[in-house]
Length: 69
Image (cartoon, rainbow, N blue to C red; front, side, top):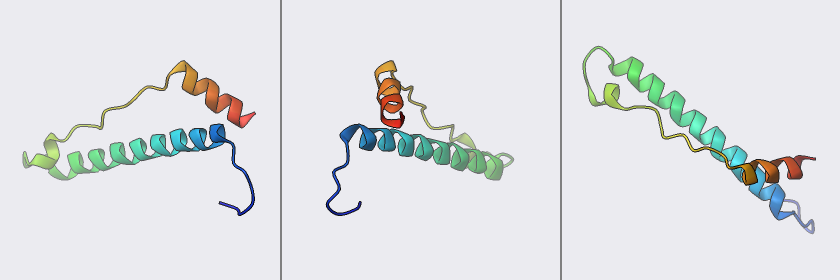
């Protein structure tokens, strides 16, 4: 973060929400690759399902929209 520059909390919240979504996307891709690798052998990797997806509340969407515009 740049020194001497105040960052608005809503911008940080929006960034956090965005990075959390990116992390969930990565987790989903990892689970998909594990299913492909273990699909024929019945290994534990084949049993791993996609990560639980959280939904974004209306208030969270408003905060992101306010931070972006």
